[in-house]
Length: 85
Image 1 (cartoon, rainbow, N blue to C red):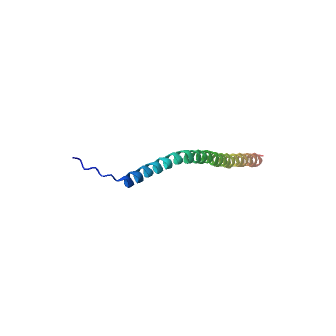
Image 2 (image 1 turned 90 degrees about the horizontal axis):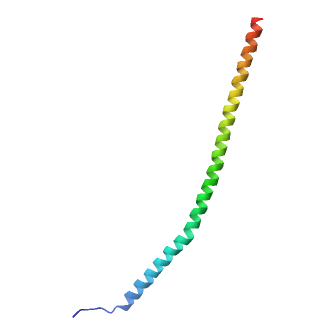
Image 3 (image 1 turned 90 degrees about the vertical axis):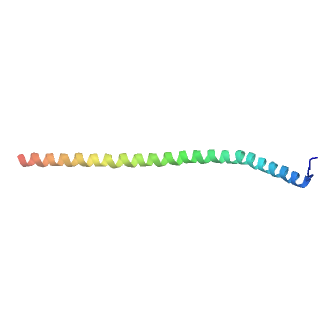
């Protein structure tokens, strides 16, 4: 004969535990997926803004540097022409 224990209390607790675990899994997928999508979108927005700011600062710096070098070159040419006369 088999010795079967009729422990309904532990069976009920196991079933409740499995139900709670299943509920937590479903809620985590329904709550955290939209939150992760919002975080992902915010990261793209902030990263794109910072990247555009960095590119504009880079272009502004090297554009001003180029203008400065052109002006220095022109001033040296005018000094050279003045000295030759």
